[in-house]
Image 1 (cartoon, rainbow, N blue to C red):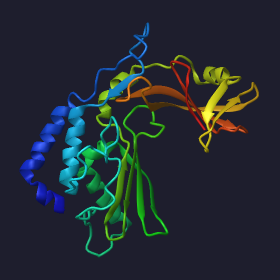
Image 2 (cartoon, rainbow, N blue to C red; image 1 turned 120 degrees about the vertical axis):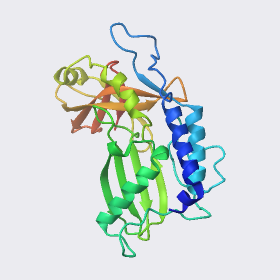
Image 3 (cartoon, helix red, strand yellow; image 1 turned 180 degrees about the horizontal axis):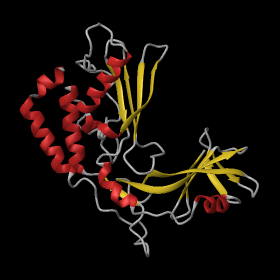
Image 4 (cartoon, rainbow, N blue to C red; image 1 turned 135 degrees about the horizontal axis):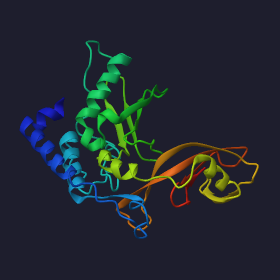
Length: 284
């Protein structure tokens, strides 16, 4: 690829070594927002932004795109420093790796090309390719091709806006946009998350939810309240990891263990309640 020629083998090896060094200390020890919990590990688990990682991501972004306009990291996500988007216009277009002999790749070749691209851009994407799963590959009417991936690095599935990767491109392999909310160095968070034990079984959690007043934001952005009843149809579908921006630190993400509930005949269809602190994390 063009950017590999510009970067050079020695510079690429140096970047990998730098990233590995920073990654070794990128995850801060789990911190307890409200002080330590008695009888358990610190909770929620905290990921704090690292200036070194953001700097390395900005450097990698510049090398991969040859773009000089991202001096303040405007194309990077907060905290994770993964790629938020590509610039609207690049001096030199970016392309997926070429696979196959024909001018246009078939589906099998496209998926292999995407796999190679993800491996090359893994530091900006923020995920080990081995824990990324392709969940959707569609061709849109406007000519865009879209590939969506989910990051699955933990014992429990990720929910919410994190752990997503979307790649948009054209039939001639030209990249239109790349956006990632993946969690960098997720394997370093796993031991702390695995040590968290829910305080109730699923059936007890359902009983507890019935009669609860749920405050949520509807599709128009208006805050609403809904009170479940003893007869509400509620199913606990799974324990999940639900990351949210920290309410006390704008440079941190909190990782919560949560019950995922499905509701029927209600104004909300899903509900996430912290399995440790009994607070509503999300509903809608």
